[in-house]
View 1 (cartoon, helix red, strand yellow):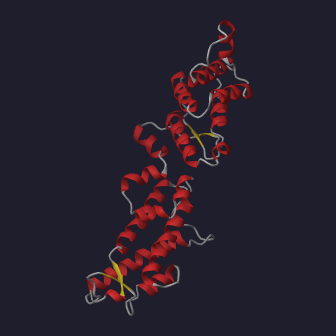
View 2: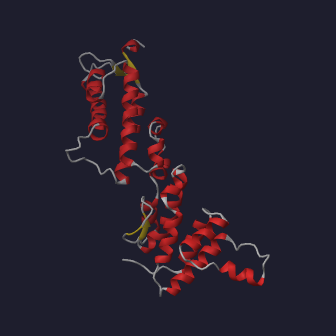
View 3: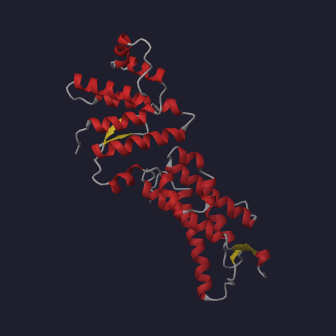
Amino acid sequence: MLKKITEATIEQIAKVLGRELTGSEITSMLENLSLYDFDNDRRVSNPNLTNTTKWRRINESIIAKIHDVYGNHAPLWNVIQYVANPARYIKQPGQWRNLRQSINEILIFNGYELGDDGLINQVIAANTMTEALERTQSLSNRLAPLKLDKRVMMFCREELLREDYFHAIFEASKGLMSRIQSLSGLQLDGTRLIEKSFSLRAPILFLRNNRLQTADERDMYFAISALLKTIVYMYRNPQAHHPKLYDEKNIDDAVSAFVMISKAHRILDNVMDVRGWDE
């Protein structure tokens, strides 16, 4: 359900947008969007007047235009989309992500959001602070308190900045396979790499203090292999023509993937190759 956008909400948005533009850029924007620039009137009586605070200029122009069109909020959307045009941030994806998040933290309570394409969309309005934070936080924000293994992020920083869940997970899983290759000395990939490295008959990699002599030790060894294979099947090489077991656009599924890959890296911290068997 859409909720009325108050002038207080518009003011919040104006403060966010005001940080993104210079005074001259605001002048150009108001002209391009056919919004009234009240500073022009002020200069008639005071030619030496400097520009009003940036966010106030944006705020008063939006509110005046909304009143002119009988409460239609199109002027607000036009200003947001003008400032948040992704093309303006092509070399600053982090700044774009922060801007989008700041806007959505305000709009989500009214049933709107700024999409990755830079356009305003209607969504189900958030009713609580917890719900709003869960829906507007970036993947990086969600991952930060989990204290994941640093090697998870090492391979996918660019994808995380773009909020590209699928490719961020894909690159993180590639990084995990690269580490197994380095530990084992093998140049295989995917499940073949895991099966060869963690073979019960002729293991190349093994856990410290695990001699594979008891059923429990062998079960633990098998569990490690199974975990690594699960990561391969789900994230490393999912078949395009088969339904995926996770939603590549769902942030909760992305968090689960990174937690699993982080767990695998920490298990590998306790893995040695056959040369260390007698240690």
